[in-house]
Length: 298
Image (cartoon, rainbow, N blue to C red; front, side):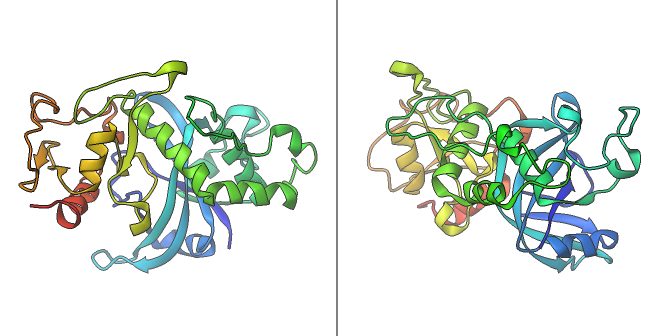
């Protein structure tokens, strides 16, 4: 197993999503080496220039593309966005050889769509990406943090020591850690506003009274990607999970015939969900289709 960088660009001709990564045969050997381990997504971000490390995910398996010769899919799970994108040139660079002696990026490396990295390089990128652990208070919360930069006092030139690697990986798979990040990222995307009702209530201490709902539930292999989430008030969240509300592909709110009371006065007047400003953070249509097909009570 090995860690790696997977390049993903918005508008790419490749068929990428949070559940799979599409790539040509030239990278097959490198991607095969990552099966069972975690990778970092890297590329451009909407509205800003430059390239950034953006998220982590686990590679579960590799399979041939049935429709395109010499192309493959890596099936992914445990997708989780960083608290904020990490500039690949910051702090002197995170990948060995990425910065040339003259301070410029190494073009020979940046053109590679899949780059294998050491566990230490992976750990340093992850530490930089997950940093904001106290954005909004919660009722019962004990902060859990990744190892600090000070803990990397030795081994930085080549690799981080094993006792640093274990807590990094443990944090990535820990459900509490992932739930906090998912909530934080979804509420960020929706500006702490319920997508179905438009309510934006901030309680004492700055705690938002809105919840992060998974479209495909975690227990059914739903990801922690923002695109598998919607910010909803408690009542709307319950109705969404119960299959009494769902969304069409144009984000119209659909009401189930099983509702035995009129809720029109609770919903947005235009019956449309309020979406994040960034289209890249809108719900994935495939996830919404799953919800309509598997949860919604017609």
